[in-house]
Length: 261
Image (cartoon, rainbow, N blue to C red; front, side):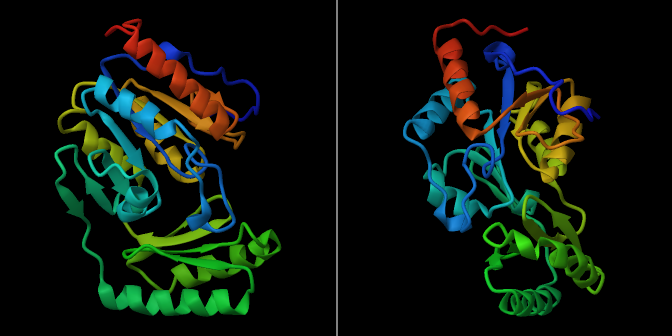
């Protein structure tokens, strides 16, 4: 893992070729953060760029997010894209087949009630209910982060079927045994991703599981932002830089400049 902030190179546009399987995180990677998770904005031209890359890769493009798939569809409007939601608790294959992980509904209900009580006691902390997982966001009130650092692990310890996944000003309680790396590995074992070299872009600690899987499969991992340490081999400073890089990837693929290695 790298520990230096500035020693990672930017990814070249030809990192993505016609034999690539491309995986993209949403918040902090494709989307700039917003205090309210529902307030994110898709910049002009991004979806069209992703459509072109999706088609050039014969469908081997997937969103891999902490958001629910339904939320991704509301934002991007592309039910035909493969997607993993809630860190892989739900996964939509390229053929549209939906796979979900079983969750103890009673345990989740008790956890959800406690999480809502915490948010009520901390004005400005938001609850994001994702059906099979639940998260506390404090980006709007970062002064609550230290208290949530203390409270969230204690809550998770009371629910053996769940685990705490910290992120960027977010504390998510999700069922055990699933992460973004597991989701990416599942994609890579099926068409159209199977046999392709994986490339993964993500900004958060939750993306490190996917970085590790992609690296083990001979692929390339791209960290967005400056978080350290990281398993990533490349870096881009911000979502705006991701958009510019994706435009360069689109140009390379559509101009025939990218060839299988």
